[in-house]
Length: 494
Ligand code: NDP
Image 1 (cartoon, rainbow, N blue to C red):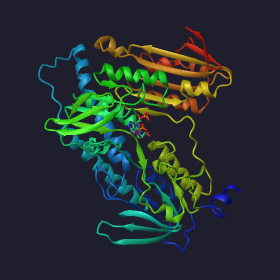
Image 2 (cartoon, rainbow, N blue to C red):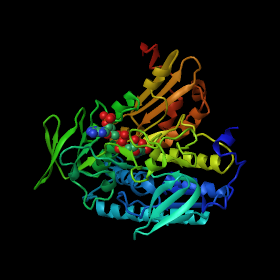
Image 3 (cartoon, protein in one colour):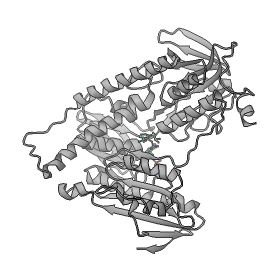
Image 4 (cartoon, rainbow, N blue to C red):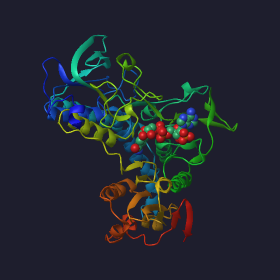
């Protein structure tokens, strides 16, 4: 019944309908689009795809196979996080007996070159993967012309038109600049990953993922970093206690944290950019990064003319199966602004293929998706924050926390605690959420996510034997409740 509704009565499998050039045409070859196209070919679909020409810094006419994550997001960011981490680690190494007698200098240009080589390599791998899967790739800007028609404008202006049974939009999102005087002097994360010179001093506006990650990267590489955000704490939406831990760690690593602060003006001077805050402070910087969110790439797709509805932020409206308001047109990933993470786009892409060409209507499950912020040290979470659990709770919520000096710091002397937290439903003993801020948090939380997905109880956590000595073992040895919250009021504080 559901299948009939979803795929127009087709029993299953791709049909290679002779009326169309393709069974599926995908606009956008980022993580989600590539996954959806490859999986669709595995179900027998004839797939065409288009993507903008490659460039590390994106624009309305530049992009590249691999998309944001591979070319100017997760991958190059993580390379920079690795690069930035060596500085403080070398300092810590002295206490472990390493004699660092000569000057230790950081060569940004060398890392930049390595990063560029890596993303070019990955771009090639993605193209080969598509070719091996039999996906026909076109380089150019895609546009929806009708419910079953797409147009690709190539670099030389040539326009190609194709008919297709289904269209999948996977065009992602792009960084936004705030409307403040002098905003053209600032950069976004795209340019930040491709700067010719490493800035000696930076101002970052924003308190989200990108802001705190770049604050850590640049500080680790030795820059003076001023981080300005509107709220009292960074990372709105995360567990409040963990947000405070991140703020403390950023400050502890030497980042100047300006809470409840925004920027009112940027002025070019002979000595760099003069940044004025809304408190009247003036800060000089070599670079100003706007990490103030991203907007879905929908402007140039001609969606309005075709009847594909978008919401107030420009995101494509989709149902639970990723179908838009036009039955033959689908959308996945950041362009739909559901949960803007690469692994989520991969999930949506896989399930789109299964639904449309695999004969098995399948909805993405957004519960217990783990994620991480790669500040230094990183924060990683899965499930509910304490605030979310309390909001949804009918009875008691037990909160277990552990704050400890990681073993490595006992020798290095670094003053930075690792903090872990479990949020447990009092009635069922089910673990509703887990968070950790400390070294290797994403590697540890990925495993905890499996337990939460399986509905693990606190008793099952407690009966699991720890790995010693490790930080991870704390998750199975948190014996005493830190606080119980009932009807929104703390009852015990141990
Ligand atoms: P976020 O949505 O995470 O954060 C945006 C920040 O900008 C918020 O602190 C917001 O403040 C602030 N802001 C927005 N507009 C203004 C303004 N006009 N003036 C001042 N501050 C402003 O966006 P990011 O750009 O950091 O990242 C985009 C998305 O990319 C993320 O949401 C995430 O989905 C994804 N991403 C994921 C990563 C990961 O998984 N590790 C890494 C990087 C990105 P306020 O809170 O006050 O609204």
